[in-house]
Image 1: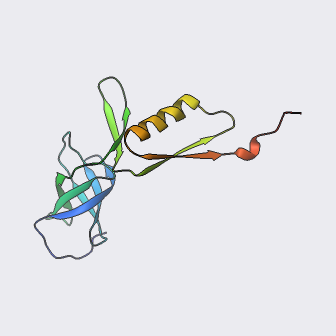
Image 2: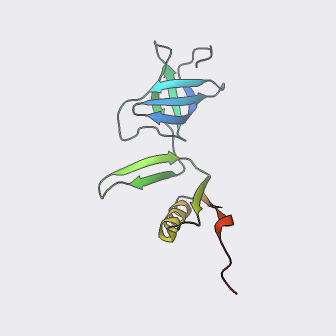
Image 3: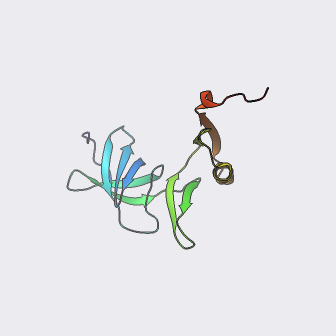
Length: 135
């Protein structure tokens, strides 16, 4: 959904989501703009601030990705790292106490968050399933 706007040489916006080479950008005026981006190592992901220009087909074109303060990424293998989100202030790590949880995985997420300057928050679910077996 695009709102009418004054035509500018370039606009600044926040990437809300990405679908391949297409991203949804929240423009400064509150409009959601679908933008295309060229394939590159500097592709924008959710959380990126970008410069974009209006295109001829009611959609925009990403012209520049602005600087990031942090990146949350997942290593697929020794050579491939997939960027998930950027410019995060906080991450919620949700886990359940039953049937079991992976303490190593939780510790890993906390360490990654701390390394990137992201505040980790733990969200524990199903606490009502814990029984007191101590007599």
